[in-house]
Image (tube, rainbow, N blue to C red; front, side, top):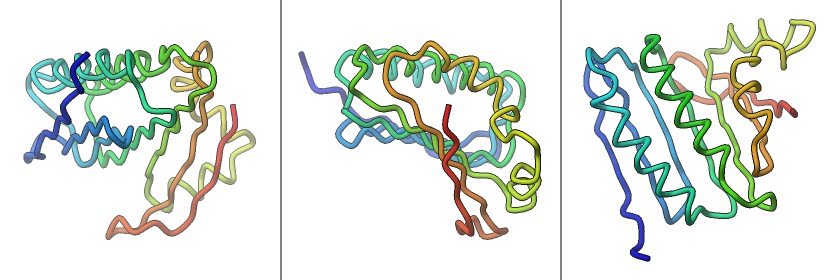
Length: 153
């Protein structure tokens, strides 16, 4: 089987920077996602991920550093996460990294159950084949990481 080529989609005013790096297992989304036609942006990403899960790396890092996203973008990102949850090796790990503003992070830390805040994501990942971990990062206005926490499922 031919090596999967990396895919990098540069950010625009309405779309995020998307990096899909097979060799390191890094998949990242950063910026805003408000495309008029989300399928045009995300369908090639989902196709790449569907190829990736056939020959994944032992650790896959999904990095979601989204300032803002619309509903259609979130639907596509959910499909991508669902596909990653089907990496067919229980000894492999899917690490989901979520970057959020410091004030939102502090609000989550004060809530009764931080995991409850991520129910949509945990619902998608509840039947995942690989081991799944989630790490939250609190960021300042310059996107510098101030704090972090691991959320266990």
